[in-house]
Length: 255
Ligand SMILES: *Cc1c(COP(=O)(O)O)cnc(C)c1O
Image 1: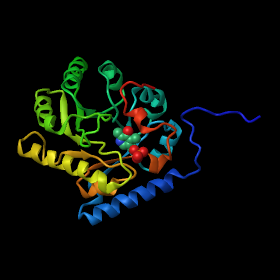
Image 2: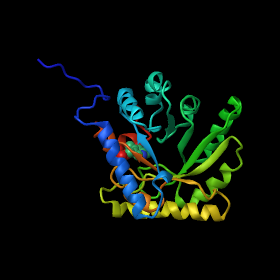
Image 3: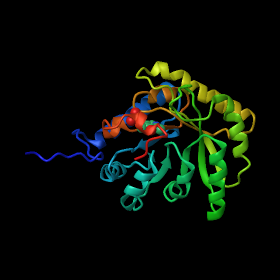
Image 4: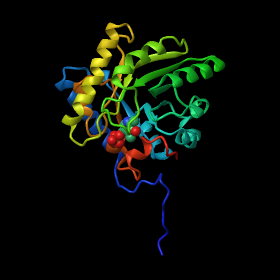
């Protein structure tokens, strides 16, 4: 009888990470050219939820330098391998305040700050550690209940509050966008995030060069056309995940 392999970190597909990365880079370059932008102005973040440390090592060996994790538990599990590598780790998942101390052990940026309570508690801990942290404000641009992120109308207030904390460097905005396979349906989400950025710059709440973290495997071209400076790509590099994204975008469930 064949052994049943059921670790959620197992990848079943046969694929080449190197080839997938090359294809993503090509897509990024093409989208930049179409939008009259410089490809170097768009950074690729590898969304590595459920991806084993070994596969991440392959991507880093191929020249990548930035990954994003959704769960503190996974950061912890992969840390013994990943902490040895020249890479930057960001947090892109929903963050519960009781995980702040732990997440700060691993990441240099939290892209998913979406409420004042997080600002306050992050600042508390960072003051205690005597350090600062880069953050992005996550905005819910799809108005879907199941996604996290501050309501677009409240984003400015949250940006204003964030300015009060010397420990927090607000680098820009992040969004997941509408969950739809058709990039044109997602475009209004990306456009909204860009508009919020522009208004925030006018109000001196963000710098001119603020980041826009948006766009995933299926819609990175659209995101780049709308001004993305960081695209977060998982599936197109590492293959399909065994868990639906709702699993990662839902507060109740933890891994
Ligand atoms: C999983 C995930 C991504 C990447 O999605 P893919 O469709 O696999 O490219 C990007 N951002 C966040 C917040 C994610 O959770």
